[in-house]
Each structure stands twice: as C-alpha cells, then as structure tokens.
Image 1 (cartoon, rainbow, N blue to C red):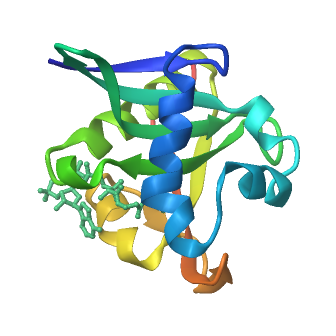
Image 2 (cartoon, rainbow, N blue to C red):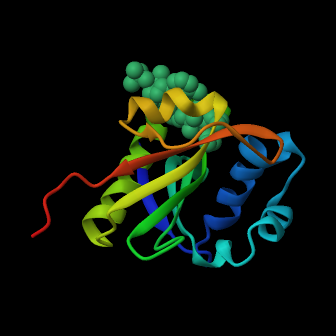
Length: 158
Ligand SMILES: CC(C)(COP(=O)(O)OP(=O)(O)OC[C@H]1O[C@@H](n2cnc3c(N)ncnc32)[C@H](O)[C@@H]1OP(=O)(O)O)[C@@H](O)C(=O)NCCC(=O)NCCS
C-alpha cells in the first residue's frame, strides 16, 4: 500500500526523501542537497515535505516527494518545489496524489489563494494534466528551460 504523508526534517524518512531528490532531480544536473541549499538559502528549513511511502516488508520506502514553501514570495502564495517520483514508479499516479495533497494543505488548511512552480520543460504536460496554467515565457534555471505555472484556489471565500 502507498500512503501520502507530510513530514518534517526530523522524520526518519527525511534522509530517504533527500536521497530521492538527489537521484531523480539534482544529481542529473550536477547538484546535490548541500548545493540546493546554497542555491536557495533558508528554503529547506521552511519547506513542508510530502512523501509517497511504500510499505515494503523490509521497511518503509519513500518513492515520491513534493515540497511546499508556504507564504512565498508573499503571504497567500505558495511555491511547489522538488517534485520527484522514483524512476521505476513514474506514470502510476503518484505525482498526481502528491500535488493533490499539497493543494489540499495549501488551500484547505493554510488558506493560500495561489500555488506556483517553476516547471521543467519535460514536466509541462504533467502540471497541465492537473489544471495548472502557464504564467511566464521560457526561462533558464539550473541550466534547464522552465516556465512558471500556477494553480489558483477556485473555492469561494467564506
Ligand atoms: C513529473 C513527475 C513528477 C510526474 O509524476 P508521475 O507520478 O509520473 O505522474 P502521474 O502518473 O501522476 O501522471 C499524471 C498525468 O501527467 C502525465 N504526465 C506525467 N509525466 C509527464 C511528463 N513528463 N510529460 C507529460 N505528461 C506527463 C501522465 O501521462 C498523466 O496523464 P493522464 O492522467 O492523462 O494519464 C515524474 O514523472 C518525475 O519525477 N519526473 C522527473 C522529475 C521531474 O521532472 N520533476 C518535475 C520538475 S518541475
């Protein structure tokens, strides 16, 4: 069974989450967690991390992750970052479940009005399939073409 969970940096699963980010996202572009922290000072400490956890007989395994930076760059807005699914488990809907969990947290619990991300060119279709929309032209980040994509809370305010 696979569950989606929100974890802090103190969680026993956090090292696995970092390892997955390095394997899927960071190492292929010459980065690792220390370099990521240097690129985005103070961000790691402010993240809310979401993980997809597979209950393996030998222990729990993190097979997907996404991180939410709430109230960034201003109150009411959040940034989705470090979205990664284990290479062997992509295309099974885990990325979708993770983004839905982030959206529920951001809009339902934190009361944010907008989420955005810097989407890699290879992932545009993924975010589009979830209703996210382009909000910028192509720009380079970490040597890769990206576009800003956004998703707004469409629920009426109480
Ligand atoms: C992008 C990523 C997070 C998607 O997670 P996933 O679990 O594979 O995605 P899902 O199975 O939930 O797919 C949801 C939908 O998006 C589509 N999709 C997934 N990845 C896609 C991609 N790279 N391009 C276009 N469409 C994609 C799927 O076909 C699916 O569409 P459907 O509902 O019509 O079948 C994952 O493939 C990944 O980790 N990729 C490498 C790292 C990366 O690029 N991260 C994003 C950085 S911005």
